[in-house]
Length: 136
Image (tube, rainbow, N blue to C red):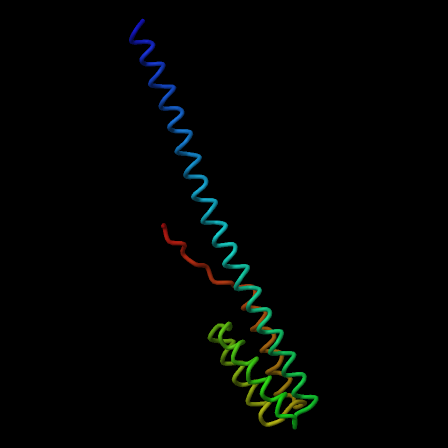
């Protein structure tokens, strides 16, 4: 009878310990998933904001291409967009900026580059990089 009581006590203790370990592991997994999700949201919001400011600055520059403030705003927005963009998108931004500097706003090639740029930006927004969350 004494050994049965010990066996029941050990099983009860092991069950509680196992449940606690599973709960702890579940919390760790949830914390990592939340950290990755927040990182992805942050990158998405930063990229979309940078891309919007860049495209808005490009439109403002097209309307007032002799205004140095508009040109300065375009370069500033380009720098921010370059920081957030993937390598293929940065190359297209460079091509687009070349058209802007030459004041080529309406040619077929300019329209094609603008469409490529918007498509590359959309692709960037859909492909947010993942990050490894380190154990602390």
